[in-house]
Image 1 (cartoon, rainbow, N blue to C red):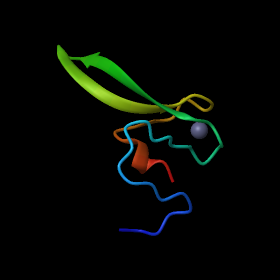
Image 2: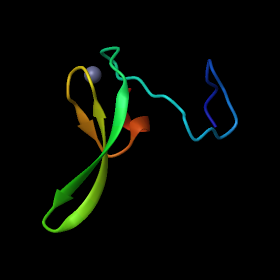
Image 3: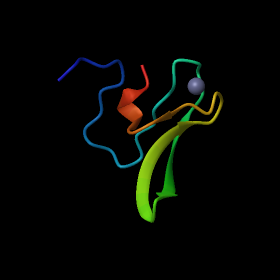
Length: 55
Ligand SMILES: [Zn+2]
């Protein structure tokens, strides 16, 4: 519900950016036999569970 500069209605191709300015890409990892979706910054390689965790 937070106001956003580029508020768009639920777009499937929404872009997220890290605090360092890098673009966030979704990745699928295998961990202990389980598939796990994580968000990774292209630039600083920071990993978060979801793109919205990059602040
Ligand atoms: Zn980053």
